[in-house]
Image (cartoon, rainbow, N blue to C red; front, top):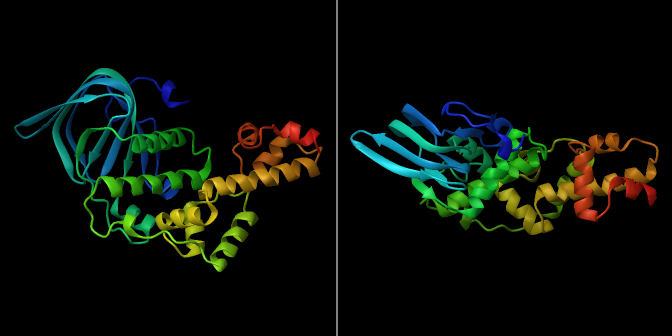
Length: 290
């Protein structure tokens, strides 16, 4: 079920999917946006963002004697600093759905190897930022479908989101964006390539690759791209496609689905889609051309 197909719900405490930081590096939750609902004592302990996928309407958030009226519309972003709370919330309009990504201090430190202690978000309402919404909604699709593109892809998205938010919406001194990318050294490259090539069928994670290079996940992503000209996920994807082509030609009678699963693709359809997009042919055409 895709984001567009999710049912409407007026329960502000319900959720469609949740993926913990142990899998994705940052907690990701897909929520309904109520058409009409109320909620009391709404506390947001950790810094977090909400990005709307669909839904139009108005919201009223009350804290003490002050009430703030806001709107809701697709791709609108809310940034919440840690500890933000509302005494009462009310929604009215067309129901929709949104994704929430949280940034606990421990998860931020793990992604950056302590280079960043915490994400000091400033609370912002009714914000639009195409890059932030694009990443967040891609994370929502991954969360809904149990990470079809693997941990490497979703963790890369989390690292990218952290970097964008930290550079645009915080006032942290000595920010991550000031650290030069550089390139991987010869030994780091050999270790990484050996790990990737020897584990094409495994669900490789960004943190695993970064640890092999002795870098934080955040710094590793930039250094890897500076070295190879592409992201870790796309690099691994390319190596899998190459291995699939070789297997299809060498093992003519083996089921295509078996080859796909052995090389880390979610399914035969997943491999077919990627091969068509990258090579312009399907696995069956590759096999016939052997």
